[in-house]
Length: 555
Image (cartoon, rainbow, N blue to C red; front, side, top):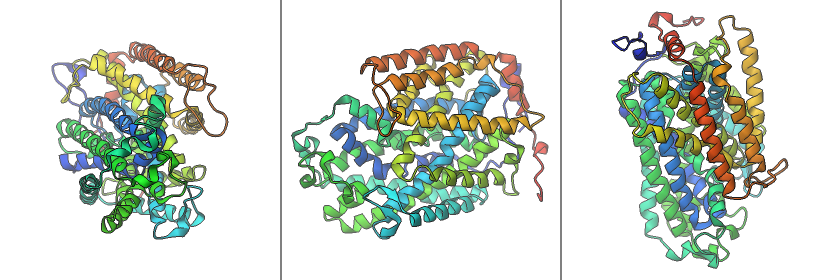
């Protein structure tokens, strides 16, 4: 795709990709996002949220859904403007240059590369019902055998991704129809097993642990993790037909459908849980109880729905499988995009005859296995994934604000209404979720970021055509990352092994500080963004022709 030109001159230039094939339609793009949203989260997060927040966990899903919808709308405009592979990793590069681009690009890759292992853990946890030796329900961790099976399953994700994107889209669509149908049917069935008294279990009331527990459950129980994936259409934008129209539609349809399913699933899970288990509330359910290990299937079995319990155990393989599959896809495309930005080695751009970035795909498998080692359970890895994801999402409102300021005449097939409010609100939302995740997650995320900077720095050192470092346009980045770490340390959220937060910021005042800090960083970043001419230069550099496909040995 060559650069577009017109009366507006530079404002109409678009970036493009090389070697990828546009073979995915609206349904395929929508299902790419939906299959990422409906994964292991629906199987576990509902009960986890109920344990942390009681029946008020429903509020957590509503708040989380609102946050996801705001961020999805911003991604829809960006994806329509610049439909390139690994979009979330590349928008900040175009708006702020290399320093911010390296950072948010790495956040995008870190988020994507860790999701497939999380989904494999979900398969092992539900699979323990049939194969006891792969998961220990007492410790909540997979066994050595389960670890080996996780590696095998991740390898299968990788192998399927070598299919041409048109064939892959068909396989993914079939899986996604199942993944959407099962939660919907479960919601309908569970409504016939409803106990209204469960919404005030054990005499503790609807919100037994207060609103703070609700906020903590949003990242802590996996609510935000469950909503992840609406941006998948952005990651695959280089392979979507008519992307200016289909991409925004796909993102919006997927997130609205996912929000409805998750909120209703939480309601029926609370209502259908046997009242005999809730004499001391949801926190009184014994550790290792099947209702905690595989919630929906166990509740179905206790309600006398044996056949449906079996189907839910089958879905516990299909749903995580589909999500892990698409995230393995997106990780390879993000790696491709980062190589296009010349942050990653150029071998990450190599594509095979089917248009699959094969080297980037293999590296997604290798690094995905690496992240399994220090995080031996679904819950342990979910926190890191959530933190990296929200840092990635934070780049979207900043990029949108910069593009609205510097490129007001750029083509926008979908234009977010009220972006002057929604963009800074989206940045506040992202930072709130990071804060709610707690300092025990934030410091681990910080360690991953430092390691990522070192590895990318080594890669760029040996690249003679690396881009110059745009420090001026990223002057806000270090204060932002350090500031969020300090607020988290002084804040109210965090648990587990030291180091932990010190809690000196009072509750409610802490969130006011996060909101105010977010607004300062947002307007500082938009003010410091690249000049119009420099943005357009970066876009022009990526407006490649098909003849520019990088050479791949043997192809």
